[in-house]
Length: 222
Image (tube, rainbow, N blue to C red):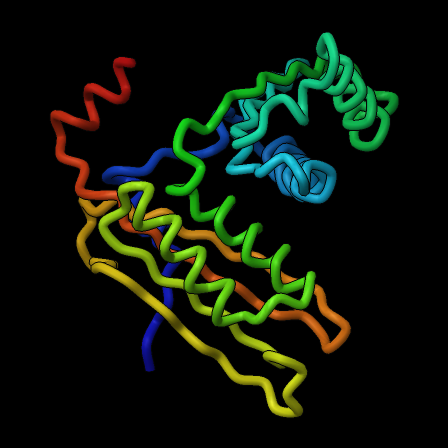
């Protein structure tokens, strides 16, 4: 039996960092963790058209800072920052009503969206929901990723493909994906396409090269 481990979690102690920066004890830890999960799920649904890569969360007892990494930051910011202000109000009213929490949002542009597994997976899901042929969608996504400078990419989808009676999974890949090499920068994401035949799961692995100690220090300093 093989044990499947999330590539990001597998590399947390080496080349990857945590996407939440805060400290809490006891019941506060439980509440903060629950809030993080709910806020991220809310933002993924709300910002579906903004090519959302990831959401980093920094917090203290009364301050919450959301750093949103997006391939289309203009969609989130809106005219004169109106989109960000609306998003702040919705988050505060939905999750922090009656609680003294100052919410701030920072929007950062993803410079190379074709190397983001989250953006690629969401695009594949969007195309499948529009009833495009899944193989063509996968091949086009792989071509975009490889042209963007990736060393390898793998896309796996599973479900009732093309409305088949029995669900199955198909995988396409290009280049190399060294999942057991801890210094390898593997970007991984899961997405779901909701079709009239049911849910279709999508997994994307993108190999962006190796990260050595000198390169990691340089990235942390900048």
